[in-house]
Image (cartoon, rainbow, N blue to C red):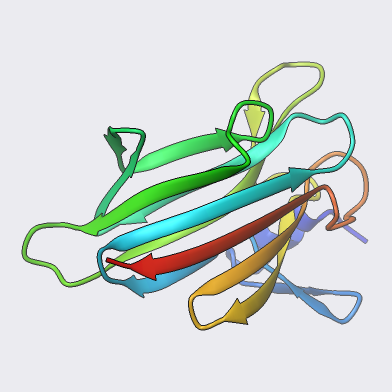
Length: 154
């Protein structure tokens, strides 16, 4: 069996089936009005891990820093991160994309969407989701990083 990254290339980024489960390259929360995303990450093992998070049609703000995209690392982020999400002026909603990232042991660079990276998406309510991430190194495990995301409208 080829790695998840190769299978995602073949599927053009669409979800793929692995052992009867649907695996995603990333997860999109949309449409979202202005509000707050509450994020909690828990990593397993020694690999430095985190998430990439980006806004389409709006802005994200963390601790007063406004950007279209952030990287949050389990080693440096607080237990719970609150992210203000705001649509662009004149728009009613935005979309937010989340994916897993990790530091390559040898190169020390940030990696994403390669090798055996992927997400199992577990909706927990209409406005909350738990993501079970497989980092790229090794086989797909989906217990390398667990991310709970809840959205609360403003």
